[in-house]
Length: 364
Image (cartoon, rainbow, N blue to C red; front, side, top):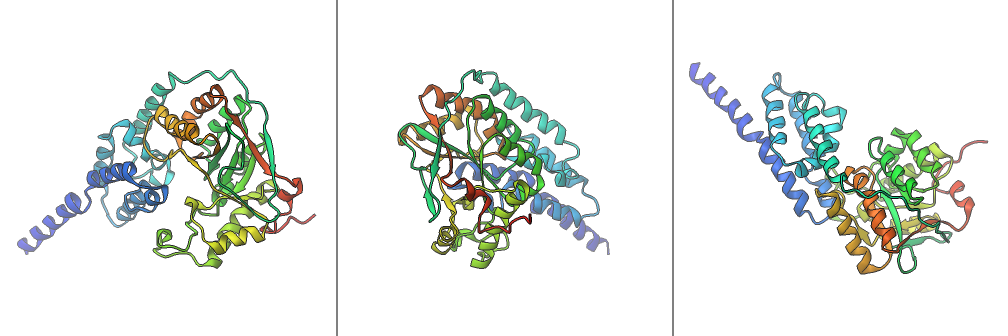
């Protein structure tokens, strides 16, 4: 019996020390963030912070005593450099992770506040304003926007995945300060979770399209095996598109006839669906990669290098990323002083946003 108890004890220690090697898992996440070839590869990976914390929450529910687990997670996170720690910020803030991080959450978030505050010491004072540049596009027979068909030294700012109660207000403030307009692609779940904030985006005069309901990958290829390990059917993908559009419409009473496929992944049948429903397929040709760890200056340099090389186009950003909100004033300054104009794209027919065939209309 003593031998059996000893074996069980050794096994339990092994589970804590090896099977739950939190430090190794966290380091793999940091490495993947640097090396992933795309946002899709980053977000669907087991090492993604959202997936890691989901797994850890599941493990904690199966353990009677989670003190050792919590200690190891906090210790491993505390050992990270601030820049690497920043990729975990959204999970640090998530209420569902409160129990796992109760002993270190406040300290980690204070470190990140200090990290970004230090960078903001060199942030520009934006005392300029952009001239208005609203352009119309005919989407009645569908429209595919790679560059937005804008002219030389014209760019379109786009923000995906929000609205975020933490970061979207700062994005809106930076845009408003210089009278810059953008296109926001809201997910259905974020629109419903933050309706008043979505109304603020609308009140500031931005275009608002949709970005699916849950940010599921909608394409029919092996890259689009979602968290359940399979690709969505055509019917499921259409439901994601329609429900996301409906969510924005339900909050605002309108939705721009613009849609962006999560990760840019689609297929001919879904693109035809948008065309048949007079909805623009918004892509991009300038990627901020704001999901990667990096300084504000590095993010701005990455964007401006592409802007200068291509001369014009659509810039992809995410208003759920702190580094985007923090670096936006610097990016706007670079664009303005570089002689670039910021374009707001709208449908050529003002009634389009009230009459989308993708939504069920409100009753009079």
